[in-house]
Length: 498
Image 1 (cartoon, rainbow, N blue to C red):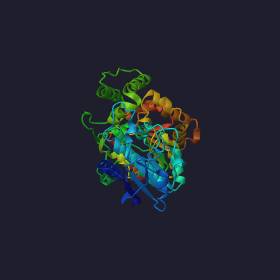
Image 2 (image 1 turned 180 degrees about the horizontal axis):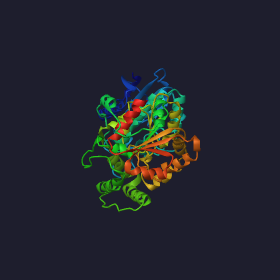
Image 3 (image 1 turned 90 degrees about the horizontal axis):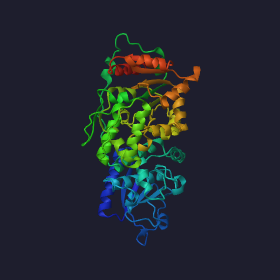
């Protein structure tokens, strides 16, 4: 069921009409909740070739909810305005958002710019909000940044998210979580378009896993701890997913030319892929060194990040490496969403879990730790995906290098979210080696201080890793497996228990 918003146009030339049609296609393809319905042409008052904003809104009374899109500049040099459920946006002069781009305009820049304005105005109209009710004067990458300096609009398009304070204001003004999720889906398109990447518009085919669930049996001698089975029955289980689940043999991905990769990278392969990106985008040849410690490894990633350019080619490299087209999300990933989880957290940057999730599943990163935590408390009957180390489509959220880990360690809302899960939920680690001495290890140690109040911890681990993890984290009960396909059989057993 769509929620309809009336759309009127004014003074669009042929090129602008084509651009608007593409942007509307992106908006409607990305989500199935909001529909902008074209109602024809509207005259607007002009002064010196610009739309007279004040006079225009005097004529909008009774149109709510509606959006008017004009091809002329606005009289005060803004891109959008909203008031009392009516929105006004211009398609003119969008190039100024990219004046700081040393490599020129991305091919899909006009589409990204229009889709950004449509997303902004739609949310404001739904919430009956005026311009200054939500806008940030300082640019932080939120959709509601004012962008007094116009080139900062490109930053907003690259980040393209709705911050926690704006999400709260929207909710207070009657904008539903489903509608906010729909706009976030459109913003996913914005991030891909502005970085020159084609969004994945077709999801993997829906597969019937019922036969596997009915026939799956644990290998002989394998035993699932009764406390873990009970957590499934009582719906008190949270799962933390690592990169191992994106590397299962039945997960299939496809990289676009000229990329020659056939699967997502192992952790150890990331520097070499960064080196390839450095050569591709900047013509520099740098071979990753053999490192002896995690600190050296992360320092090398810092080097590639700086060499690529934080705001220039690093985001493109992240997209190249971690956002292939997902052909098959894999059985184990799909089975996770058959469990009645309290929460699903992941350190993965890729989109495998999102493609395995039911449509409309909310997705948060550590930057939205506060609304993510609120959702865990209030989202009864629904589960979200919390990407605690960021998402590849938002490079400003990715935690991959030493500098990024250090920044994350200062984020108290994020630490509070993970600590709350670790201290109070029954947690199952899947696809993890549990050998990261950074933030997760720190939170595990902190959770252990909770003593009897700590939630129980379990981990599915290859047999050869079990002894080391038992010594390092005695509070974690390990469930050993000998073959990776046994993970799906274990998850099927948990689904049956629930």
